[in-house]
Amino acid sequence: MRKKNNLTVVFIDDVLQWGWSITDLASCLTKIDASTLGCVWTMEQWVPILESRWPICLMLATDDDNIVGYFLSFALMDRTFQTAMNGSLKEQDINISNIIPMNSSGDYNLYGDTFAIMPDFRTVGSLLLLLGAFINELIRLAQQGVYMKKSCTKVISDSGLSIASLLSMKPVCNHSSGGTIYFGTFHPLGGIYKKNSQLVELYQDHFIHRYISNEHHDR
Image (cartoon, rainbow, N blue to C red):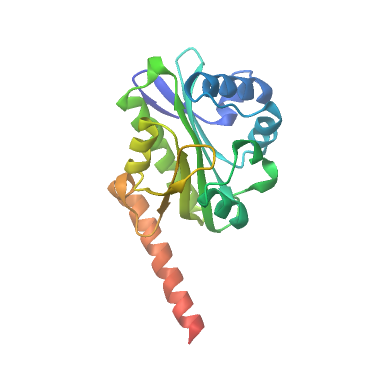
């Protein structure tokens, strides 16, 4: 767990150790969505996804074990990722059936679904705390042979635009229900990613090795 200004980044299993159930957590995240974004996943979407532990789910917690923000991203099947890239993926269409577990070596397409922090806790420090934890998670996954190749997200606010810019993502199209789709790649790393030398080294080594392997295979 990573702390800053009395906030801690926690994972799903940390929250369960508080005595919460998956349903409790899903209900809490739904309330955060309603308070910050105005759009809400159903419990039928949330519970299987949280139970799977497949997404990268990073949450901001207070000292009294309350969730006040979170960052959720996950790998999508290629076809679903392309739908997201085209601005046609609707929130109600996201479910456990089109999310991929990142539990084996390989390159994945990452969809940034939600970055939400309650207004009383929305500071530059809390934003950077979540982003720092996200980068640490990318490092942990890369050390296990799990890498991201592309990413996209739907931006609907100025704060979302700031985050997309920090992650070196660029606008590609409008979403069918409003907002803008932003896209980025992980080779080369840009934005806030390139400030972490360990992440840069892991990704450079991986993509160079993959390029050499492909060249050898093509000969």
